[in-house]
Structure formats: structure tokens, C-alpha cells
Length: 380
Image (cartoon, rainbow, N blue to C red):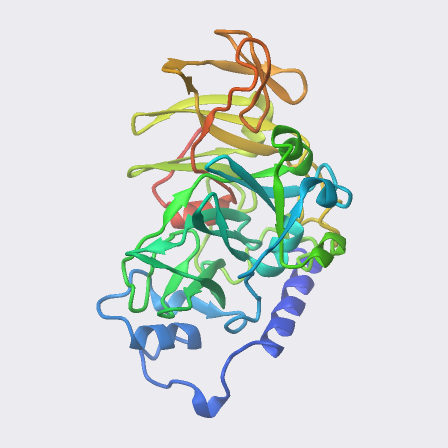
């Protein structure tokens, strides 16, 4: 890890621990396996009926419950008001449900990591882990209950560990399941969402709304993880990263059924389009420039251009389309000659106005994707 990244990570850890919700020593729980050092894990183990689905000794407390405050009642701002202060190239997470499009700026997610929201009538948890660069959106309904998720302050293989407020079960974000606690084994449904540049989102969805912790966050652009994605040592990561790629390589990863596959951004930036079939599911992976890294400098708007991806089902009205790059940021299908964007929208040609169906995927650092999908195929 670079000196700058190490310093930023250590300072962040100290600050979070100082303001964390870790209980005083006399209230801490002393029972549980001796190798478990995390107070968060110890508490969850006491209410776990069965074998944990992860090794609790790998859970590390970086902070305490709610030291990083999840958003439970987001402030919703229209595109015009937000667009006056969001930069075209900065990243937002786009979620579209039942015709409603909503953007969750990374400048807000970097401070909260979880947004409990309702979109298109569906209760969702929009989550982003800055240490793994994993943005994942979940349906919050579990066995008839609508869960509200918070940030536990613990990390598992460097990843965000969520907890539900109803049972205090622990949910490692990349797994989307309750690994410890009363809801052991319960799983969350993953919904399609994408990390995209604001300009592409606003163009594709003029009526998009923007969710924030407060409107003041439109003026807050500080990245507390300055230099992190230029390092080579994942923070509080146990074990050795998968050696097939450098740890901080960005990848687009897809899991269909029991099969996972990943494509590096380096490869995607050269090819722009990759067509594949995973477990019988036809896919097209699109990459376009125009999105900056929020983790490179102290300002989320000023990183290098890392680009963005979209993963889609290439079939439109039962016909499979094949794509090729068109211009610096667009794509064209060979069957109709229509022009498309990385957001999966046809903007010109016979199919103008048509939208491809998004397939859930993750843009993640390679070390994190491979740690949670150890059998992943790596496309090359």
C-alpha cells in the first residue's frame, strides 16, 4: 500500500473507532470462541442457531455499530436541482424499478454505505463498500419482513458487513446472506444496478431522482480514502488475493446460477463489447469511458477516468442483437443499425427508445470479487 493510502486508512480507522458504538469494556461479551476478536461477531454468535456460514474469526472490527450512519429516510432531489452540483463524470449508482429511475451519488454513499429506500414500490437497500468498490442493490424483504439495514462497523475480507435492525444478524455485503445471527442462511434478492457517470444517467433518464442523506451532501466532495485504489494492499484483508490479476484491478463480475465470471476493465476498455453466455444466460457487457474514480484523490470528482460498465440481456422482442463499438462512447447493433449507450438505451435508429434488460452484476476490485467468488472464471 502506498504511504498516502496507508495513512488515510489508518486515520479513518482511528476516527471511526473513536466515535463508534462499541460498548464499554464492562458491557462487552466475553463468551464465544477465543479466536474471535470482533465484538460484533461475538454478539452475533450468541444468537446463531447452527454453524456460521463464514469463519467468524475473519471478522474484524474497524468501527462500531452505526459509526458509519446508514440512510433510512433519504432526501429525494430532482435531476435539475442535483445536476447543478453533480459533475458529469462522477459516479452514481443507478437503480430502475417499475419505471422509476433513481441515482445514488457515490459522494453520498462514501459516507453512508447503505441507503434504505423504497423505489417503484419495492423496499431496497442500495449498498456500496468503498474498500471493495462493490455496489450492490438488494430487495429488503425477507420471509415477509421488510428489513432495515445498518453498517456494523465490522469487515469480512475487507468487505462491508451489514446488520439488520430487527434481529442484529450479520450480512456480508458481497454474499447477500445472513452469515451469523437469528436469520442464519436467509438470503437477499439482488436487483440490477450500475455504477455510471452522472451525465449518462441524466441523459438516459431525464426524470431521474437523486437520493441523499441530506441536500447538503451535494456540496460535500471529500474522499476520506484518498489514494486507496492506487495501492496494492487491501485494507484488513485476510489471506492472499487471487494472483490472476493485481488486487485493485477493476472487474465486471456476473453470477448466474452456480457460475461466476469476471472481465477486467483493462480488457473491456480495449474491446468495449464482450458477448458471452453464462449458465445459459446470454449477456452483452458494455464498457465506455467517462466515469472517474472516486477513490484516487481527496475529491471524489477528480480521479482518473476508469470508465463504467453495463451488463444486459441482448435480446429485444425475442431477437438476439450483436453489438460493436460506435464512436468513443457508443455502440451499434448489427441487426438494425441502432445506436446504443452504456446505459442500455437505443438513442438512434429503428430501435430508438428501446431499453435493454439489465442483468445484475458487480463492478468490484478483483481481490474482493475473487475472495467471495473463489471459483470465478476470468475471461481473457
